Image (cartoon, rainbow, N blue to C red; front, side, top):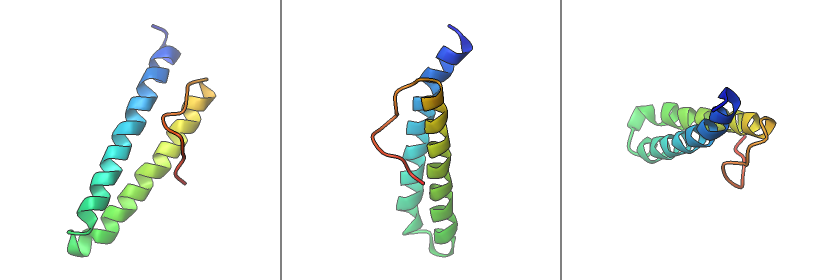
Length: 71
């Protein structure tokens, strides 16, 4: 498998994995007391990273990981 083909397979997995972590961070933020804002910031950063990963996937001719983007 060519490196680019492998990346087209890996990117959707990474995007999904990041999305799962962002959701976990948001769920835990409500119970995190003084760490709430840091967890919410981390979730936003993962969503921003996913937007960049989706751009990379699109640039490689891959299908979008899901139907919407996070900014």
